[in-house]
Length: 86
Image 1 (spheres, rainbow, N blue to C red):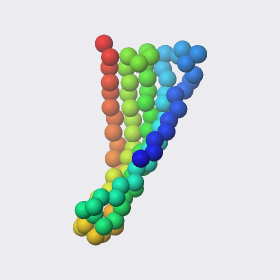
Image 2: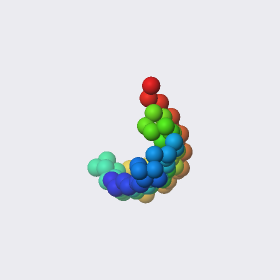
Image 3: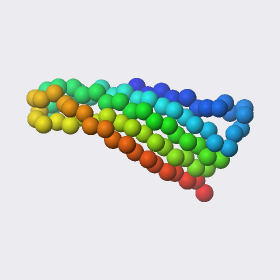
């Protein structure tokens, strides 16, 4: 699994809203399946008023298997999450 992101703008500017774009890659090779799979994620965290509220948007590719020996196909998944700190 590999994941990277960057928080914009810099902490010195102290803005009300900050964005953190990210990407991730996963390679999975399960014993029960003959073919390995690869997944990709891309998205962004939106920090509002510091870390008091966060909205995450993410698009992911997920494998679908028809049988244990078939090559996995891929379907897309879009996720939105909201977190608030009181």
